[in-house]
Each structure stands twice: as structure tokens, then as C-alpha cells.
Length: 73
Image 1 (cartoon, rainbow, N blue to C red):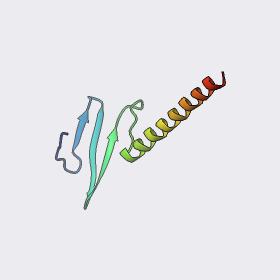
Image 2 (image 1 turned 30 degrees about the vertical axis):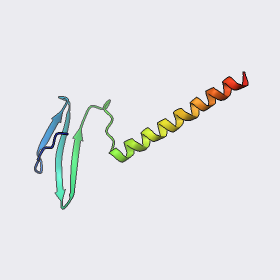
Image 3 (image 1 turned 135 degrees about the vertical axis):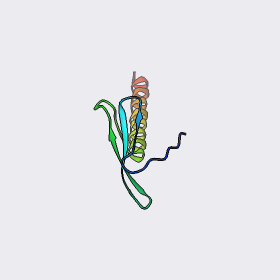
């Protein structure tokens, strides 16, 4: 992991096309602004984890349906 220090209104660039800017600092909370191309998805980590879990559950259901189809053949 790379750890960087940034002050308000300072930014960093990722992959030449994603900019992350520190917008505000209040106590232990930091507000970030992210500028990225529309094709680059940006999620909070907890939302990303929920999406991944839902995808895995849907995949498991699909595999179960395929096994059931095979049994019924």
C-alpha cells in the first residue's frame, strides 16, 4: 500500500486519467472528489463488497439451476 499525505485542495492522479482531490477535512472525516472517465466505475468499498457478494450468490444460484437441469435430463 502506498500512503500519501495530502492537504485540502491537493490531488493525486491514478492511471493518467483519474484524479482524486481532497475537498474537505473535518475532524476524522475526509471528503474526496473523484474525476474519472464514465466507463470507470467508482464505488465506496462497502457497496463494492455488497455487489460482489450479490454476484457470487447469483452465480451460485445459476450453477444450482444448471445442476438441476442436468438431473432432470
